[in-house]
Amino acid sequence: MRAHSEPCLLWFSRGQGRITLGGVTRGYGPNNAIFIPPGVMHGFEISNQTHGQALFFGRDSDIALPPAAHHLRIREAIAQGEIGSILEAIQRESESTRPAADRALRSHLGLLSVWLERQIASNANEAIRPSAARRLVTRYAVLVEREYRAGTPVADIARELGVTPTHLSRACRDACGKSALELMQERRLYEARRLLRDTPVPIKDIAQLLGYRSPGYFSRAFQAGTGSTPNAFRRAS
Image (cartoon, rainbow, N blue to C red; front, side, top):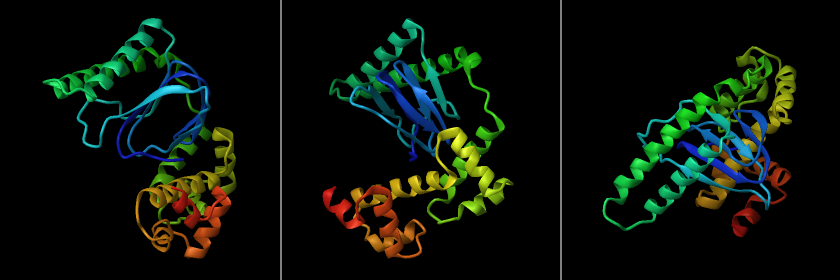
């Protein structure tokens, strides 16, 4: 489980697997587009047969983009060809040294936002109406993203949501196959791996940043979740 500070579009052109978006898991396959706004917790599995592209719009992008996450199954060949051409043009202009490449890139990003808006509208009838359990898990995912650094117990979050921890975990298992605690632990461990890999922050400070009671407790939790100690993970990275 992770979240980005900028909007992201995933385009899967080959392969299949599962993606968890806002606490709800669905299968994905070829010609699936997933739009993920900033701060939305998600995770997905890939295999050697999976092929696609990930486009990050930037933290300060003013391109018109959807406010909510969307998982779109693109069945029309014309629409599939359109996004393929747009993504190729974006990559080409992002690597170009020709004059006005920045303006061309922005124009193609604008076309991508139009493509997204049209596909969301045309797929509206296929959108899954979320059950009460899935709506609960989506709300929980938002709170996980808010609280995972604080070490807030799942029971406290369940209380804020107006349900018991047992009911919350049952809803999480129904929605994504993981308990409420597992979702929280995955989010914290992803952030721990990111900090160990990408920053020089001392391990004891990472433990404190992520709300663990002590560096020793953090090390045990990290090893249980990843199979490696924090020190060994940092050296290998």
